[in-house]
Image (tube, rainbow, N blue to C red; front, side, top):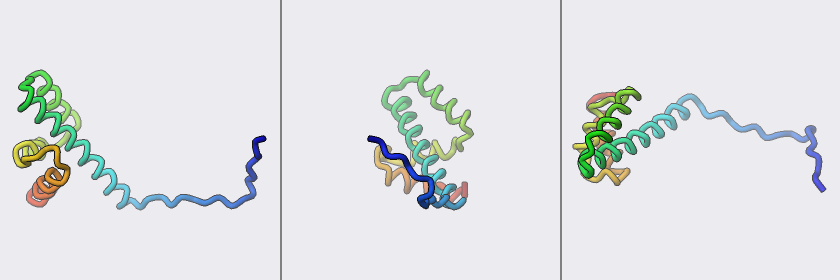
Length: 100
């Protein structure tokens, strides 16, 4: 038989993340989506040589207002695009130089 929940019991409240934590989390998620996009671009442009797919992906960069120089830096400045740590190091170095 189902038990009825009592509303009189104290409920635990979840702490809301601070604004800084939220921004850092969003930035990490944005960075991951950029890494995915870079990997797709590398695959389309260098491995497949597919100009139509490459153009669509570059249009996605433009539509999402992502820094094209950042994408180009990740594409050409990172040797191992499947290595998150290598991508992160390349991206952080770019940030230091350009202060995104």
